[in-house]
Length: 251
Picture (cartoon, one colour):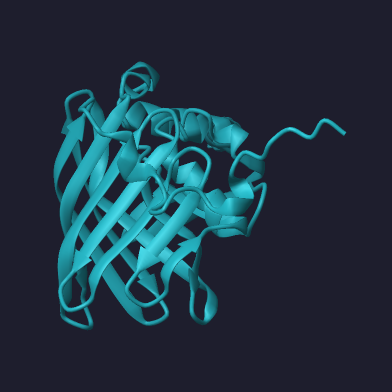
């Protein structure tokens, strides 16, 4: 009997030794593989996602389209019923936003840095270039799924916390911050409905909750390596004066 107890004890010790804390690098590697793999992701030079936006507790709907172009351009357009067109873009140098309430404005600080990260089609592959610090925070349950919780601290702005499904490696939740008329507000975004289109896998549904508002985005179409004109990423009216190239002084 005593021998069986010792055998069980050593077996438990062996199991404990094998349950090692994962590294952030290993979690990100699994996420990349779950998205289609490094080679497949690098092969995407342009992308367009089209779908529908719903502000659930206000009964507001609209069409949404996000366009990406390598190496680091993004354009987001929302045509919202009863409100109008809400746009945001980054042309590789200048970030901007335009809506019926605030008009045209130039992005800066943490808001600009967040858009820069999102603009890169290879942001997941080159994640260490976008953050100065990262930390594994353990496991946590996200809608009945076990998830690895990881904090990423950007070079500018507050940390972003991401939750990766332990089993699939997919990103299923992200906690961050968003600019609003009330200042920065916390935002929790849940990602689901993962689909494989071609060689890559992406979430077709995103639900964001912030300041008692819930926004649901359901994409219906994903196109890759298509022709996208550069002009859609450019700030309306051209670059702001303080970012335009100035003549070289000979003094």
